[in-house]
Amino acid sequence: MTPARAGVVVQIDKSSQRMAVSVDGMMRYSWPVSTGRNGYGTPSGVFHPQMMARRWYSRRYYNSPMPHSIFFYHGFAIHGTTELARLGGPASHGCVRLHPSHAAALFALVERSGPRNTRIEISN
Image (cartoon, rainbow, N blue to C red):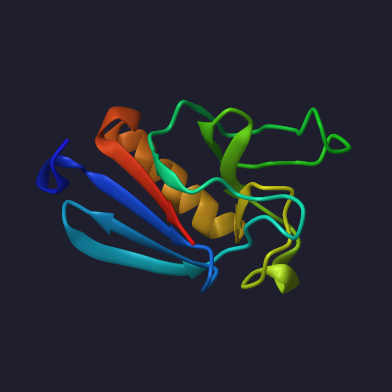
């Protein structure tokens, strides 16, 4: 997939705890996120969405709600959170947390573009 054909490109920078979203090569959004805290790393690399769910509950962590989940690697997902005060710093068990409205907007973009036309890039 070439960058010009990528559709949606999601870039997550773990050091700055920011997500940048580009659509058809144009920067569209920049949002604070929370990635994995100490002992719970968020994987780095280039991924594509593997599964999407508007409503999902963690099977591993206390049935915690994970609205607008975009699963990209095994059980790791980008999803909404209610822990808004923790956005901008590492706080998760490895998932990438977003403000619920940002998670909904990203979910809609990926749904429209399609998982095959979406690239998720996670760097340190």
